[in-house]
Length: 368
Image 1 (cartoon, helix red, strand yellow):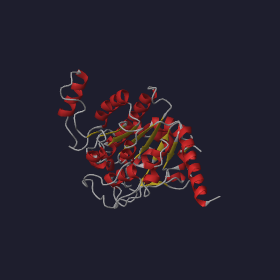
Image 2 (spheres, one colour):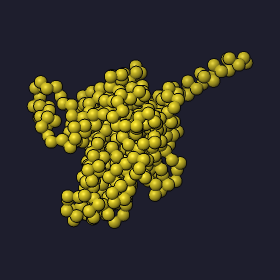
Image 3 (cartoon, rainbow, N blue to C red):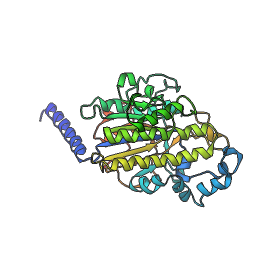
Image 4 (cartoon, rainbow, N blue to C red):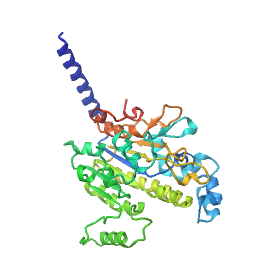
């Protein structure tokens, strides 16, 4: 058989295998949710006692309240008190990576371990050493969201909802033309006749802000759920920011409150999509963070190359195609850079072929 014909047959077989795999996938929608700067330590072991009971936590809440609310005798009980949905639903029906006490490591590959470099790595599948500031400006790299939106089957069905206004740069809004709702922009048209929407706009205008760049998680949740129930995006990014903001403010009590709130918001989002026929049992959710933080009485407040441990993160995946292997242990490391290709693969798309620098998918969360 001539060599050219053999090559064509091989290519045809590969194409058929890829098509068969895409046809076998039950996932039609993927939601990527990030809680900014949420440490793996809290995710896997719950509240840290030293930060509850000493001045290191900067807590305003009474110590008795904090211990009653968050402290339990075992790490398993503490983490379930803090993240009930994550540990009773996501970790039992899906997989979770990053518990270093059990030989599962998840880490960033960028050299900076702070937000913009982390989000770029998550969304493009590769670190970019040029991105060395949160004020870097429009992202020169194409995210997996922009790449998917360019495909006919996804065009107009990809969206971004987040609390941090820098996502307009991270997703390069002017180039990607993705619908991006973030920061303190009004969630509804100023002239809306809907009283409920008018009230939300009023709260956006009049609430005292922690800073001008980042909105509150609870304020994001209402327009987010409304968008999901009315527009039905197939690929959705959701970014919550309070876990990072309160840590930088030195308020461990509010870190725990916002972490617990994050878990609740994810549960709300999941229950909402499961109530919609276009989503029910056809949606995969990926949960993670953009960077870790330091450990110790003061280092927990910060992150970056000067804070050891900031490179360590966690990743959780749940959906109809992901084997329910639960909390992973004694496995090879996974990286932040694998998330982009994993997201695409769950939709039957080969992102690695289009972006050669991108890391490959996390194979364990894909169907065999």
